[in-house]
Length: 87
Image (cartoon, rainbow, N blue to C red; front, side, top):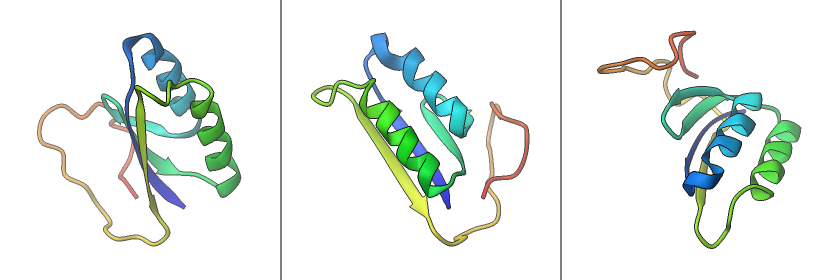
């Protein structure tokens, strides 16, 4: 499956969340990741993130695409991850 993950977490936890997300997904912009992930790895990622964040202050949103809705993306300005095309 393909996902987009966005987060808004306190300064003290940003680096831990960033490092955890980079293990599973591609960083594309501040607080935004995307990529393909298995269901098992998605569950691991969610568990790791739940152990880092403060549920009363932080927020993580995961958009899950079970089918391709579009084949490309357009970037205006700085491309922070020039590796390859999105989903």
